[in-house]
Length: 193
Length: 292
Image 1 (cartoon, rainbow over the protein chains, first blue to last red):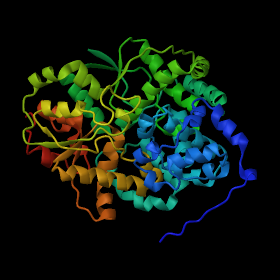
Image 2 (image 1 turned 90 degrees about the vertical axis):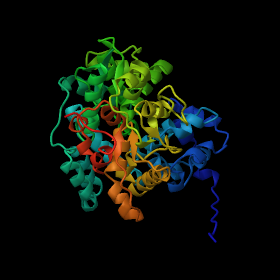
Image 3 (image 1 turned 135 degrees about the horizontal axis):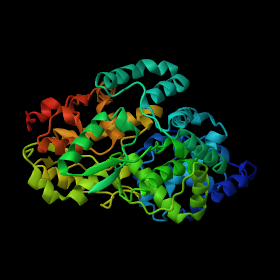
Image 4 (image 1 turned 180 degrees about the horizontal axis):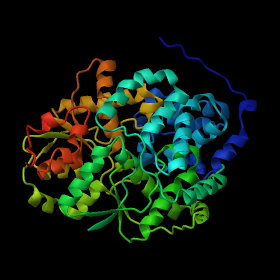
């Protein structure tokens, strides 16, 4: 039988600023409406692969358990399928909350955010360069930064794609790339949560 | 009917066959697709994880370009579709987001007020062309072909097509119209794992294994999909799933557009059928001939 481990958290471990921060982001305040019904966890196709289910994460957010939440694997397991958001009886935009937590963890350079951050960073760099994603380059960059040894296990997949003409080198780009870069720069400045 | 066409980045690369079949079918059905001038990436889910405002800006730039034409936007990619619709909805819902997006767009000499209608290509086919007209155009009904209708997640969700979110039937009805049989597929809107295939492969592999198993149980000959990422995960990784789980799946994963093309007797190559990693042509050739 699995042993149950109980941890007592004292008030000192709580971070009220974390709460304020989550509530302050557009849509974040909705976490207050959570009734802990568990519809999100029951609907989630990947809750079995999370350490804390979405329902537990919301309870932890409200308890101000910043470290546990931002070190959690939960938001990195979310595939953005929106099933929970569709069904939440309190109309909490749960997928958006997961994005908020991802951004906070990335910003604080939390351990678990490494792979997802590598993918996001590679993606953003490529789009800033060409205005469009180039999947071949994205896969190569992601593998090199996040998982150099994984190249071997990914090789058959890459080869399948290549032999079926689905992994082109190069690709199209945005014509007015300077304008787009200015928009991106301004958005980055405005979006600094 | 004319549309501002947003192909998205995957249709140039890993989903070239989706792009090819969309264009072939659109021509055959008399839909005019005019590519949005100088479109940029929608940001997928990666941008939302980094910067929400930036993610909305990318889609707003595309919508702003499309607004000049006055035509509705159509896109075959479910992720692009969700991002375009979410941006439209959130800009209307949150004045703060709208303000910031337009402040950023102004740096590039652009502006977006909202109001552009975005449709998934599946919707444009079923709602605008209409099933009656398609039925009349079918030159070889795909009789006997059993198709698992896999919608994927995002197409059916809060920003998705106007259909039942748990049990959409739009593609089922299309499959029937083409003379084929939609199978019982209760996992039709369960997520394939999306980009988790890159970041947490073991999770995505299991989701895809379940999707394949479910299709096999009602004796599907193939799975029809509406999203480039679903196609890639189920098709390109099928061999790996067999390896990891000791299964023996060989289910072709085809786009609904390729099925339309088959029923209209278009050439296999024009539909990109040869690009499916799990061979689709041997199965399809049992039900459909191509134009000579």
